[in-house]
Image (cartoon, rainbow, N blue to C red; front, side, top):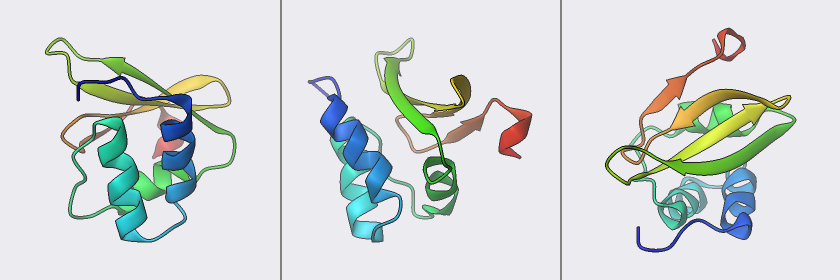
Length: 91
């Protein structure tokens, strides 16, 4: 992705978690994430109350969406759609 994700695109991603697969696919693509075939894990991560989102970059420069629950970093969604759970509360 050539441009960084904006706060609007992150807000759209958050709200798309309760929308159609097409909406979530588009929102993921807009922030630089390749949507996986099964969106259920990403939906579950984004749909939790109190979720905050930000982005960072990995060592290769790919975007990573960081998901915070109650101000604690809990999940990373990598550029290839892989979901990395960091919090035991996520399980």
